[in-house]
Image (cartoon, rainbow, N blue to C red; front, side, top):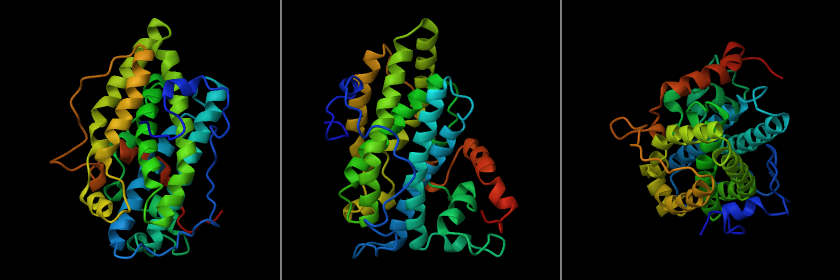
Length: 309
C-alpha cells in the first residue's frame, strides 16, 4: 500500500487526466482549524513534543531552502515556477511547526539581547540557531547538484515525507494532525513531479540516463538514516503523537520499485553514511553542507536582528 490513500500506483498517477489538488498549494495554513497554541496532549512530555516539531520543521525548512537555490537556474521557466512552489509548500509546513515548537518553549533559549526579542518564535528558531541545534535528517541538507540529482533527491525525500505525513494525520497532537492533513496533497504532487522527471531523464538520452543514475547513486547513502528511530520519536510513538520512521520503509521501497524500473534506472547498492558514532542529524550532528545553507539563509537576519519588514 502506498503512502497516498487515493493513488495505488505512482506511475499510474502520472497519466491521470485529473490533476485537481496536485499543484503546489502555497505556504499558508488555515489557523481557524487549529491554533498552534493548542495544549499538548495529556501525558505527553512537552520537551519531546517541541523537539519532534523541530525535527519535522527543520526537514522542511532546509529542504525548502535547497530547492530555492534553483531560482534562475532551472532548465525551463515552467520548472522554475514548479520548484519555487514546492519550496513554498515545504516552507509553509516549516513555519507552522516552528511556531508550534516555539509555543512549547523551544525558542526561549535562543532569545538573547542581540536576537530582537520582538521576533516571532518561528523567526528566532529559523535564524538564530546554530547548526548543532538543527534536527533535520542529513538528506535534506545535501547539495542538490544538477537536475538529475535533484529529481532523484526529490523522489526519495517526497516519498518518505509523504508516507510520514499520511500516518501523522492520526496524531494525538491536533497541530501535527492539521499540518499533516494539509501536507499530504502537497507532497503527493511533489512525488508525482519528481517521478515524472526521473522517468523522462532515466528513459531519455544516454546523457540524461547517466545523470539520473549518478544522481540516484549520490543520494542513496543518505536513505538509511530516514528510517532510524530516535528516542524522542520512540517515546512519542508510544504516546500516539509521532510516527515510527522504521514503519515508512515499505512505502518508500514500493514507490521506488514502481518508478526506477520504468525509468530504466538501477537501485543503488551503496553503504549508508550520515552517522557519527551512531548519531546523526536528529541529534544535531550534520555535514558541512548545513553550515553553508545556514550561512546564506541566516545572514540577513543576523546582520540586522532589529530590522522589521
